[in-house]
Length: 222
Image (cartoon, rainbow, N blue to C red; front, side, top):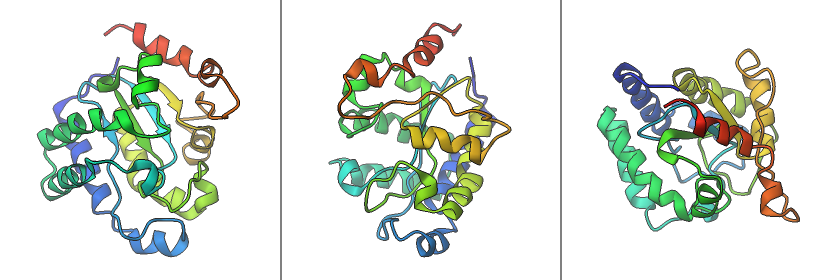
């Protein structure tokens, strides 16, 4: 089990704040036309009781997919964190995101999948390889832009993963999972198991690869 120290939480707060104020927006948007122009990057979810399970996704999806009545609250909390990256501000953001995620489309942290998979949401982190929304769905970060994928990973995601040091990892989609060995081969020599989003599969078939990982995490010593 991973137990984060206060110094690690402090560094996570700074890294999450740095996502909001990312200095590479102009470069990334010039290289990837799919990136939404009128919205800043959005921090990842880190459960307040994080203990080692990480879900790796490609990005936040489109505005339509992530639209919520709580968008303004989420943005306000992220802006507060960016202004002063304190641990309690990061944890307030996490606690607020937890119920918001219940209604998100196509995500393992929504009401349907967290229940069916017995996902201990406060004990996990859900991290995007690319921190900006896109105008159209795309589950492969390299098809969006190789340069953006590498830049975003090196600037934001790799430092986050280095602190989180996951004991268990799953991919929200195959494209995200397959990208990890290309982005950080020393840490991820092979792609972690991933959720299968094919529409013609039954629910049980979609989770075949990831369920053993979640089960193993849930029974690990706490």
